[in-house]
Image (cartoon, rainbow, N blue to C red; front, side, top):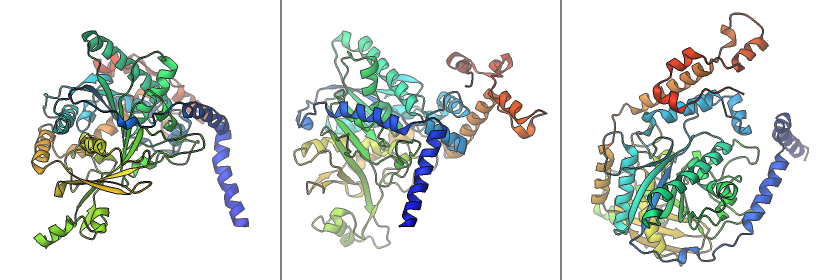
Length: 500
């Protein structure tokens, strides 16, 4: 008993003392969040949001929203506390990420372009144009199940900072840019397209923040998001309740049980870790318009004896072990965090043995949703369903075990079609030295940011006390000679920053 009380006291001190030292009041923050959650929980939810029929000849705008930039060089105790306090503005970290966002090298393996809302030319498949290839592949998969659909593709480039306030500010920019694009190029021509947002990692939280952005900045905006697709998004108490906002008509949340990065966002005093999927709480009820999908990939176990009898056993769906994927004949090959979004030439963590190599897993989403809509009457939302994709056997299983017990088997994209999609990816591929060059570009941006802020090492200071050296580091020493070193693009887009 005494040991238990000791642990409770220790955890109390660990959680509360840093908050008091940094003038943070978790109770005040919780009260504000509770008030907001109570408001959204009182909103009316459509009891059958997935029953609406969709025609095939629709016009869609699809916007890809990338995740955060690498924080690898910045994982120090000081920066971790900055992340927790959401105090990253005007720091070496924020400047490093800004240089990385301006570097086209980081656009070579994912759906990301420059800052702001940028249209994608799906026919421009030159080497290095990864966003164009991803949009082209996504459109081809859409045409497999909905040939008459007309789609326009965009990327939205945001700051990429590990900061809740930055994500909220960027969501305002996204809402404004989308409104301007519709007013300029669509509504005057009598075109009223449906809107689909696809947010990866914390880019999904940028998309969720659109609800708060509209409430606070554009309450009379007629814009609504017909489909919000979240891919590998860390679910946080700070933004989960925004899924109840009526701006979102349908929400699909894709996650993977093997995605380790999704759950390790602990940079907040409001919680310990982020969650894998939405859950009910005292002040929040997961809306029925939200469908949560566990994306699973399964392959055959490697063996030298791949006989016809063995292959027949792997497709014998009368056996529970084959249906569940736990048979000794099968192996789980579900996507990790990077395999959801990036091409196969990404640095680290994208396996050469991944069954979708070199494609990102999320490009299968239009195909998955097409068959999910065929059995929507069997699905009990918002409880998670499992989509078990087995490309080796051209098969896809859709299962739900909680509050509904069913398994439906559908055909998956054929090997011939998958080969065509892979060829499109290889058209924009770059050489195998990408990993080394990627790390070098991260390091160059980090060094450039340190030079911009003139960060001095105390041990190398000529003379003076520690306080004097500290004042020198805080002082803005950016002068004319520093501005001359900036490129024309940086001089136009980046204003000199005075550290706080």
